Length: 142
Image (cartoon, rainbow, N blue to C red; front, side, top):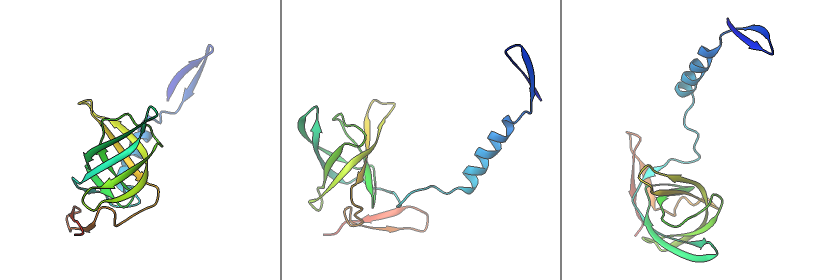
């Protein structure tokens, strides 16, 4: 029991702090990662088109990882969550509308943008084949 004083009155409350720790451990053991599609580490050249501060921009960059629903990539232009952009895969010249799903600032001061396709496209990045060790190999269509 833990004694807590509120407004001059002392209350005895059960000590439940250990339950939070147990629940977090159980959740990490039994809940698989909740993703719509497998992410694949892949450095693929892309061109991002959009508007920043009402000015059009385009930036060439390279993905960090990709999935059927989008990708994660470094970006130097200031973008906001939910902002719509146009992404071009420079290996296939295929374009797809997307939105900024998340913006991450690294300790090194770089900005990473998680882009989500407005329409899922399993073929945008090429063909990927899962391996037995949980990784994947990316094979680009020629």
